[in-house]
Length: 124
Picture 1 (cartoon, rainbow, N blue to C red):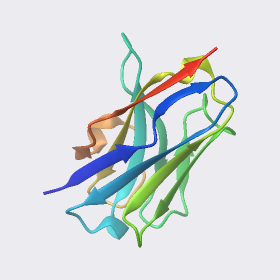
Picture 2: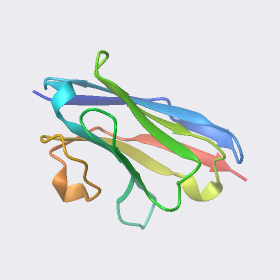
Picture 3: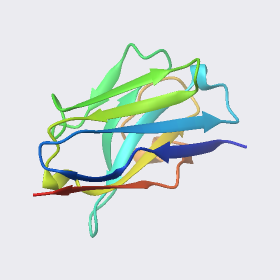
Picture 4: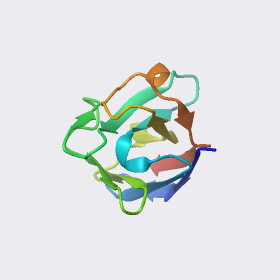
């Protein structure tokens, strides 16, 4: 049974930083791709960042390039999202997702398992 547990969300002022973590269990973590998505009220879920199985390939939404960094530690079965220079428009529920294959993907339907989501609120 795959479980994904996000942590690290909260309230931060604009310009601040947060680091999200997602701990995975129930799957051989080093063989899967991982992604971070977010969903703001009234909006569709969108890809924020994705990383392949080995961590040497990443993808970012244009809106977060240069500010967010996705990384993974396969020894700890954990994927991270470092978020810097946060803006009010980054406010959303952030979801961690696991894709059964190791190749990177940015569409929600490509992912097989999802975390419960964690709130990130950026105040102006």
